[in-house]
Image (cartoon, rainbow, N blue to C red; front, top):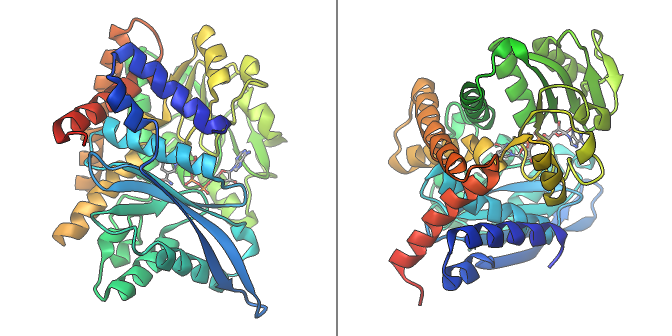
Length: 413
Ligand code: NAD
């Protein structure tokens, strides 16, 4: 077992110990149901075939079909996909939606592919996994470097193979082909609802805090926009090329246009460039990691000055870092709650696909708010009853309790 998944299982063991979970159930939750690795041959523009490696980890489906995104990234590996699949299992249980957990990935640098190559790779993924995915089996969605267009290709390829239009096989599709209104901003909006609940509980006012957002992709950018439009001051944002800082606050709408034109947030006219590391260590009260795993680790944990970390990305804080942050009384709003808005609205999209009846955006957002605030309230209550500030363990208790109950009721053969 390698490092990241090791940490995942440590967290599971730790929580199950607090909860006195029966060893039989724990044994099941410690391992994914199924791991699939396939070769994906793709005809490149230069006429040569390149074989990519694709993964799908189906972690657990005791509460419903496997559910989880597909990541296209050069550093994708099985250890990571297993960890992400486990987190999806917990996340869907915390959000109380009828899904299990899964995740997929392809080892690829999409920045080096043409549009045609990207389409052929996405279709190859759908063909390779066609027997394993499906609306009632396993429902993929976008993740890092995959997007609605890629979901459209996967849906189209799968529908051709099955001989029937099957929109419910993936979520995060474009609205024109059975996607849901509000899905593109759902992760960020859900995170924002949770964030405001926490501020309310801690009696912190909007004008008392500065925000720093790491990662300016789908999740980070939309969160920054929502928070900016709601009147919060965001003094720093970053992407893979670097970070920018203005202590008076950034005009996020202008930063978005700048990124659209130049491809990055750096060199924005009303800010100074700083390093990605520096952004994480700013004296801002709120830090929002929205990029990849392990951003806050044992090397930089002691330099973190934020009072609250809102984990919009998956797994941004390592276990070693978390111990240090907790000693400093920094509140971590855990990924399995903070970014669950994405999968909640994916669930709404799937419901719309299965019923063939499409909702207005106001309904999507109102139902998202209700669902995620309910999840928040239970997690917060458990945290208070544990008399600590360990919101991750509280969220795991909520999720694992539901999983264990489902296992007990369905029965273990
Ligand atoms: P994305 O590909 O749209 O954006 C990722 C962003 O992170 C890009 O701007 C990239 O430049 C930036 N980045 C990469 N390395 C960085 C670094 N070292 N420092 C600063 N920025 C860096 O991906 P996304 O969909 O926004 O996902 C971001 C995170 O949120 C991931 O952890 C993902 O698993 C998680 N997540 C996404 C969703 C969703 O609905 N998209 C849902 C739940 C969780």
